[in-house]
Length: 124
Image (tube, rainbow, N blue to C red; front, side):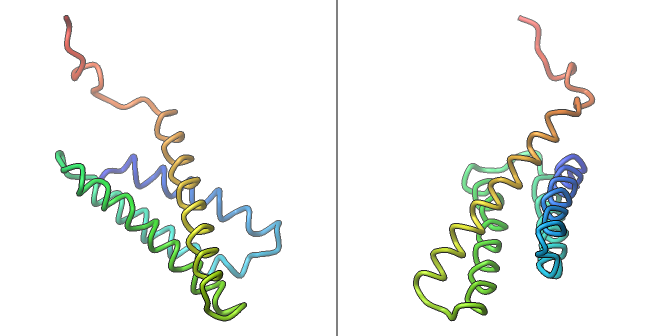
C-alpha cells in the first residue's frame, strides 16, 4: 500500500467533507465518508505497483472519478428525477469535485519530502 497516497487522499477528503458541515449539507457525509475511505484505499493499493502502463494508470485514476460522477448523478436524480440534464450535472459536479480532491491530495504529498529520494538522483 502506498501510504503517502492513502494518507494524502484521506486528509484531502476529510478537509473537503468538513466543508459540508458549516454549509448545512452534513447529510451528504453519509455518502461522502464511505466514498472517501473506499476511493483512498483503492488508490493507495492500486499505486503500490512499481510499474504500470499508461493505460492502467489512467484507468486507476479515472475509476474513482467515474464512481463520483455516478454517485452525484444518483443523488441529484433522487431530488429532481432522472433525465439528461441531471446525469450531465452529476457527471460535471462529480468530476469537478474528484479533480479538486486529487489536486489537493497531490499538493499535500508535495509538502512532505520523500525518503530515499537522493538515492534515485544520478550524478552527471
